[in-house]
Image (cartoon, rainbow, N blue to C red; front, top):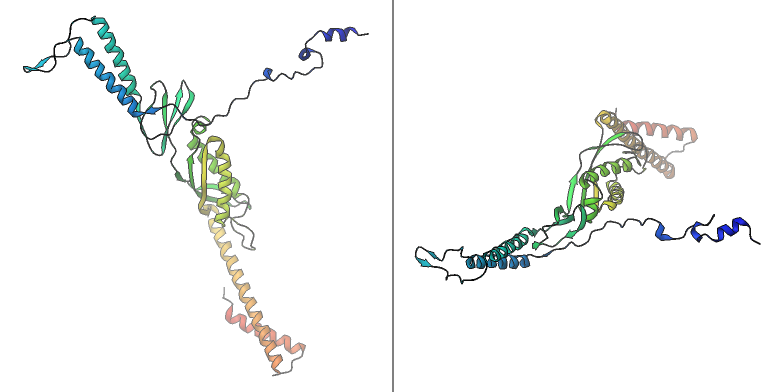
Length: 329
């Protein structure tokens, strides 16, 4: 025995029953196809040249038939008299038609250059990219935009950044790149050149914040390792530019300086650290020399030293050697 609610639900379609979930994929909106570069429509230039030549010859022939062209110049006969017959309206219609064909053929003639392409659109919709070089023909009904795809390099201005210790820095980067996918570069962003420059600044700020510019007291990784910093920058920028069709080959830091407001203080700290490192190295050499001297005296049996005398000898030798070798402040 069925309940009223069950009976009412039995007469409904599966997707409209209470508690039922629709599995019809056609009801869902289709995801937009990813915009990728594809070849654009074009013809070799010689086809348009032949069409233009044939249309021009046809126009001249029709003008002769219409009696427009002069048969004599300076008493010299250039053309035979046109044959009779034929309506004037038909001749002029043919002339106008051939003129339109000639204008259409001439209007599409253009030249493809090495290192640049034509991006074609119709009413704002992408129609393809023409990478052919030489004389080519592209329909005048399509809008053409020339795009540079040659390998390019760009050196940035000094970019303000902060290292892992919070010290302000200024960094210049040399970037080598090119446009790989012209469809994405032309339509994914308003200005891919400006987008690239802004992303470089963002990547520099992120990469520089991972390590200190200098480590005066130890051997930790620093930003002075240009190869390591360049590899990190290249990976960051390449990942950011891939969705807009730009291929990044390298991003090399060519200059890394402290900001002017802290440059003097950091220079003094660097000099102090170098001086301390030099003194520590000299003191290690002095101690090694003293130990070798005391051991040589003891092993050769030149004198017999007790602990007190050995300590006094070590002290005197250390003071004497340090006085002569350590630089004075």
